[in-house]
Length: 257
Image (spheres, helix red, strand yellow):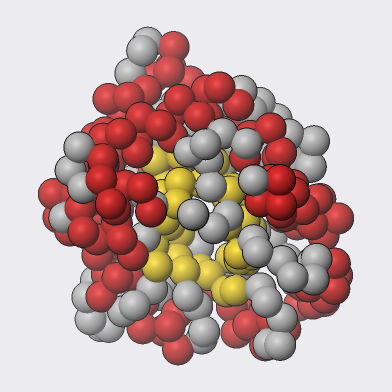
């Protein structure tokens, strides 16, 4: 059975004091005997301090991005995966829609970042998703397959045994709009079916998260989809009570299954 993962993407938010308070309240509020895996991805500047705050808690540390270069070197402003590993990161987000749209990351660059992460024993969270225009023109599946194929061609299907995929409809990120549970499940099922055709065992074990305006009110219905294995949470991860409610929704679904 796949284990739920609830990952908080703090984006470009936080301060030392705010981060410490958020981690402290979140860690204190997690249910005992929790079966849901919980992860936070703070800005790079706070990875070390947040990592220290996470010591002794069940919450794991992840990064929001890494450089696609295999070796350190003259790449001003970039962060090598080895640096993330040294700071205690276990996961790293690659291909978030904001990176693709605002910073021009292509499918090929995202695939190289995926490969670079795995080379250093970091688990990549590969983000894929369509814009509103692409959805309305019936291109959702083609876009998802194109983004996934870039990784499959470079790294092979076996690489997904050590990865997480996050479906994030771009039109539902930071907009207050959310995919319906049916839309989310359909996209997740499509992704899993495409991988099943290549390797059924890996497809069955792969965790596919939903990201896109998940909140305490909709998490349970979104996560109830048979192919939805948790969430990549944006704004709600900055509020301990909201994030804990989302974790509790995942835990409740596990308990009833």
